[in-house]
Amino acid sequence: MATNRQVIDTTIALERESMAIYTRFAKVFDPQPSLRDFWFRMARDEARHVGALNLVATVLDLEGKLDLPAPVEISETTVARVRALLAESGRDSLVAIDRALGIALEVEETEVEDMVADLLKAIAERGEYERYMRLLVHDLGELSYMIEQHCHDPKLLARCDTLVNRHADNLCKTATGH
Image 1 (cartoon, rainbow, N blue to C red):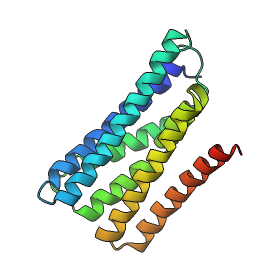
Image 2 (cartoon, helix red, strand yellow):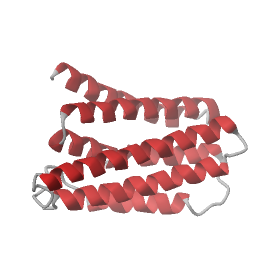
Image 3 (cartoon, one colour):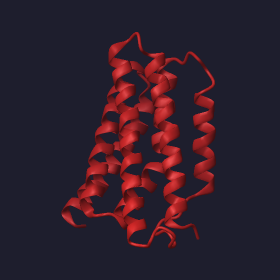
Image 4 (spheres, rainbow, N blue to C red):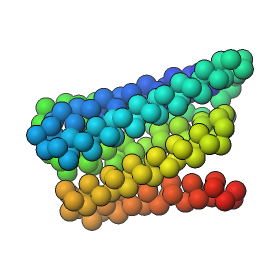
């Protein structure tokens, strides 16, 4: 079983890689201010996730719990999938907006966001988890809007909306204590 430190370190590394991809997309779409700003917001949100996880790691370290078994498991399959996806998305110097949005959805569909949420829920105060979930639902809503505006791919949009709804439902259950 992995320790809190190992799970947090791995999750932070994946969040940083996601941030790098979104930052690269901001550069690719720099001539289009609305797209550039969208990708930069996505990168900034990944940076916030890294900050939240670093805060949790610091608290756990102060409590002497950083090297204890983690309350959540990290899937090596998920890690490999995310890294392959991120590596693939970094190959092209030019990427079409529909492909970039598809990549973002694939990244967000992985279990990484769930791992962050589960870590915050298990080892942080409830408010931190709820803040994270609100931000995640907002980000996914923005991604859904961008897919609708720029892709016109009903299947991609439906996948994103399903993800938004799943996380919104989890947030509502937490807020109401269910």
